[in-house]
Image (tube, rainbow, N blue to C red; front, side, top):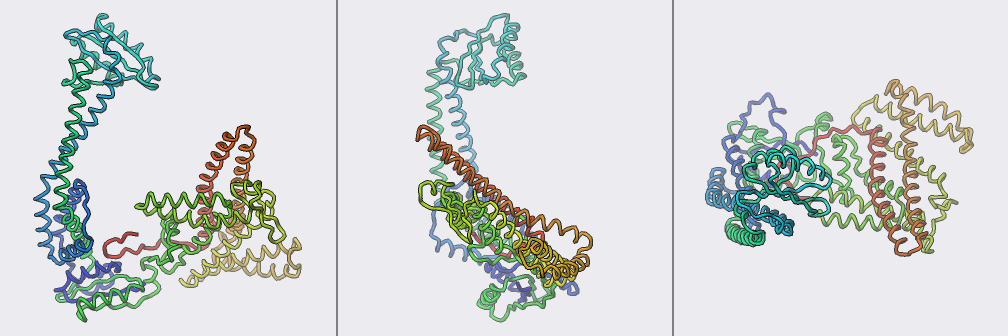
Length: 634
């Protein structure tokens, strides 16, 4: 990352800003923060920001209403380029012309369409109710001056009828009818008939009891239900036809205006971003000055594009850097394609500082390894891969879903490899069928049910390697940032752990006893360094670090739970007398286990990284790289 200064003639400020915006590589900084002794006049076109913001709001609303139409990409790109050349005044005038031409017509069409769609929905609801109460019509008395009210009551609240009946009887002096019948498995239809003079008191009572009344619209009342249904259908079809006509008019407007509106939206957004950025620029009487950060890989590109447009009139100059300045540099990820999905985890914990080691590459290696070690099943790995692939295709517009899908797809590969090592294909199904068997390696048959002790030792060993790696990275960070006490603390912790391992090994006759004395010396020296670097808390942290290492035993324990559930699924399915039932039970249990296999290993693997691993070196708090330019799609 380079801190640069861009200097050019003030009269070309608009074109300079446009070129920098199009390159999309410069992370802007406030010029005055670095050159406080120079008097700069901030260039802020504040008079345009409100108007552009208002136009963008209106154009965005119109594009939401108008149906999208396809357009030639080359023609649209040329149109954008031409529109970009216009001054801000010309651009605003062009946008106002389009808005004035379309605003009222699209608003009227949208409002009318909304009203019609609400009407269609309402008519559908009335039709549904009418059809449900149609069988009761013959039981209703046809009397002048009487009102028919329909109530829908949930069966679980059927006892409300015992309250309604006495109330109706008291008000109407028993001059009412009440018919109830089941509408469906959840609802009861209640039809009441009473004199209209009691209407207000009855409706107030029903409202106070939260009873759901179906109010029949006036135009569909006082007629047979069969006739009302015909009228409902006619009105609904009429509204649908009008909606189709509105859609046809909107499509005609889209053919004429959609491309121009979308171009105006793009150019206005670019211009708005440029104007907002002016507050970070500086200028003298004749010079425009812009300061910011550019990743090393983009320096040549930016210089070339500025040179092609301005020749030698605009200069981009790297500024001298101090370690303190580098700590403030924004963080730019430039990882290989297979590492990028794991940047998702870094977004959860925060970015590293610029001179801090970025652990994304380590996560991209260790996370799938941990995941595969826990799941360790060929069949599960294959299903997880294709499930993630389907998820990625279905929700391709969501970046976080694509990242998680890619992580699962990558993690399924070590899952299949460990499945071969453990001899697992849907638990022991592959072994039962004679398709594969656990691998015999280092004198151990790696059947997870039987090899509990070797697996426990393996996972704790993995934990030791992972934690030691975190401590070495912490020591490296301390060297880079010249923090002597932090370096002593990390080196002291490494020495203490090494000494403890040597002492345990010597006591257990696992390593030569002669190493015990050097181990004691290393322990004493390391404790002194640890106390110097971390104080008494550093000594206390020894137990915490040992606990961190032991915590990796969960890789064995969770995997063991998974394989046992898979075996149970196979055994239980096999015990069923009917083959079809046995297959269904086995499939359901394996499906549950696969769902858990995607969730639980991910959570625990991430916990091992964030709690056990990151705590040994990671500080975070870096500033994200946010280039001045249009956001590029991933």
